[in-house]
Length: 243
Image (cartoon, rainbow, N blue to C red; front, side, top):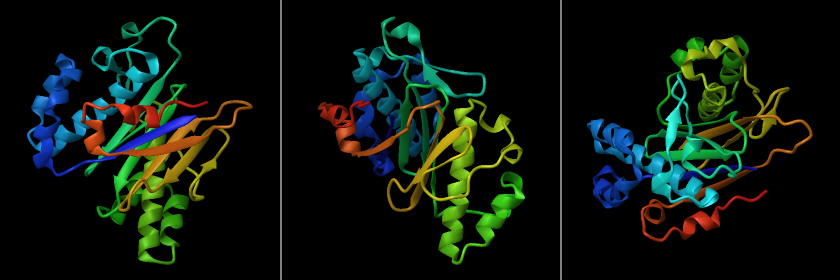
C-alpha cells in the first residue's frame, strides 16, 4: 500500500502558529529552516518535516522528535534507521512541495517518488529540454488549452517523480527516458504511476517500482494544516497504515 498525504498551506503570515513544532527539527534542519529568507519557504519546509516525522513516529512507535532523516548524495531524503528499533519494518518516503501544497508518499520499498506542481505556472517552451518527441506530441495534440496544460503537468510530474524514485534527481536527464502517456493510473515493465488532482489547481504523480506478483494500491488523504499543527494527533490514526 502506498500512502499519500498532502496539506494545503495557509498564508505565510500564519507561520508563527506553527513555531510550537520547531522542537521536531534537529540542528541541521533548524539551520535550514532559519536560512530561508521568506516565510512561505519556512512554512513548506516545516510542514514537510512535520508530516514525515509525525507519521513515521506513529507508524514505528518512536516519538517524532527522535526521528532522524538523512540524504543520499543526490539529495533524496530517507529515514536514518539508527534512530528506531532494530525490529522496525522497512519504511521509505518521498516528499514534494509547490506553492502552498506539501505532499508525502510512504512505502515499504525505497523506489518511491512523488512530485506535485501548481498548474497556473507553465511554460510550453521548455518542453524540448525535458520531454521526448513523443511526449511533446502528446501535449500538442490535446484538443484544448486546458487539456494541454494538464497533459504537460501529467508528464512533468511523472518524470520528476521517477527521477526521485531512482534517487538521482536531475542528475538523471529527463530526456534519457520516457513515461507513459495514458491518464491516471498506468504502468510499464518496471514502474506503476498514479497521477491525480490532490486539490483544484494542482497535479501530482506518485511512482513506485513494481513488485513481482504483488498488486500495488495507492491511498490518498488530505490533512488540514490546523490539524497537523495542533496538539491533537488523531489525524495520524485516520490515515494509519493498512496492508
